[in-house]
Each structure stands twice: as structure tokens, then as C-alpha cells.
Amino acid sequence: MNAFTAVTYDVCPHESLCEAMNRYEIEKEEDIQAAAARAAEQDVAPLVEVYQTPAGKEAVPLLYKTYTFEAYTCRCGEPRD
Image 1 (cartoon, one colour):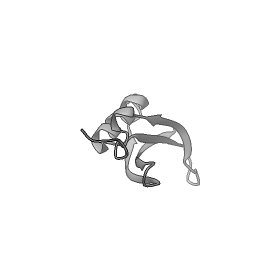
Image 2 (cartoon, rainbow, N blue to C red):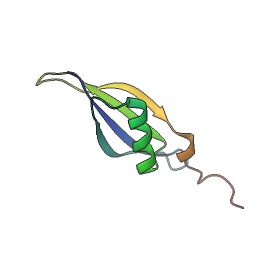
Image 3 (tube, helix red, strand yellow):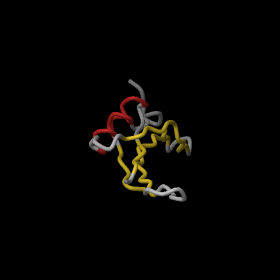
Image 4 (tube, rainbow, N blue to C red):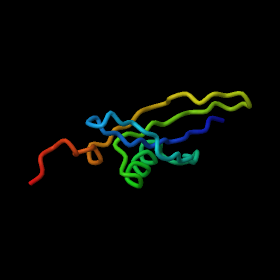
């Protein structure tokens, strides 16, 4: 059985930053997109990559899907009011 893991990233194009923050195991009965959205909200992360690990001892995680969340996009280059 495949396992899924969501990895959140802090991204700032102005600082050339794309840094992994946290990983979250996704339960097999969870909706993957909803789990990615919860992880993004918890970490205020604009980017979440979901990796799939096939069953087996030597299995290597493979990128399953990338989600972006505009609500958490860096705004440091925008003028302030």
C-alpha cells in the first residue's frame, strides 16, 4: 500500500528562498488535497508538495502532486499602506 507525505515550504522570491519546513503523514482515508490545505494553513506555507512512497523496504518517495496556496504567498516586496 502506498503512503503519502505532505511537505510544506516557505517561499520568498525576493530573498531567493524556498525552504522545507515540516512534513505531515497523510492517513490513508484522508483526502489528499484537504490534508495539503490543512498543512499549508498550519505552517502558513504557500507551497505544499505531496510525496508518494510505494510499499516496500527500498521504496523511494516520488513527487505525487504540488499544491500552491495564494493566501500564504510572500508579500514582502509589495508596498505597505
